[in-house]
Image (cartoon, rainbow, N blue to C red; front, side, top):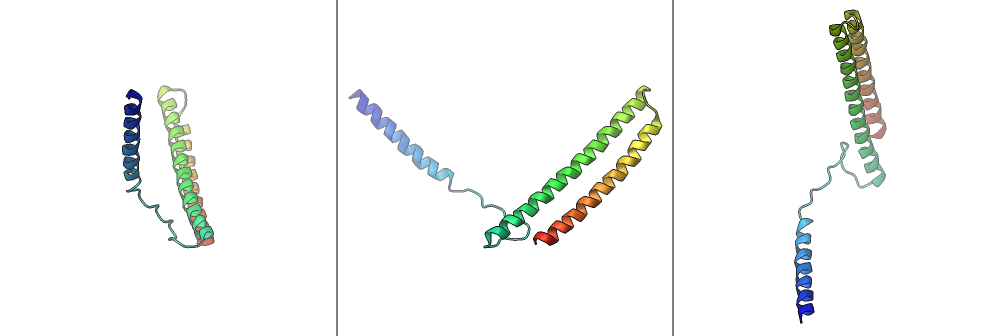
Length: 120
């Protein structure tokens, strides 16, 4: 008797959980379409998502370059304040870092344009 009641309770609990799990999947959001728009061609859809992924990776690369230059300039500034370096080194790092950032952003923008015309 005790075993059958326990089995009945487990079955009812499993049934309740099964119905609750069905509600969990009811309101899933739809997947966002790629930048070029949705299409029925699977290969074209993958290429459009790849284009978006490359653009995001290039933005991350540009952000890492900016952080790298800022970190180096901050260290040179700290060295100049503490007397381990001179202010000229800070100026060189700032100018060269600024030129490198402009070059990186320019090249990433050109790459974005090339990828945009190639994949679209």
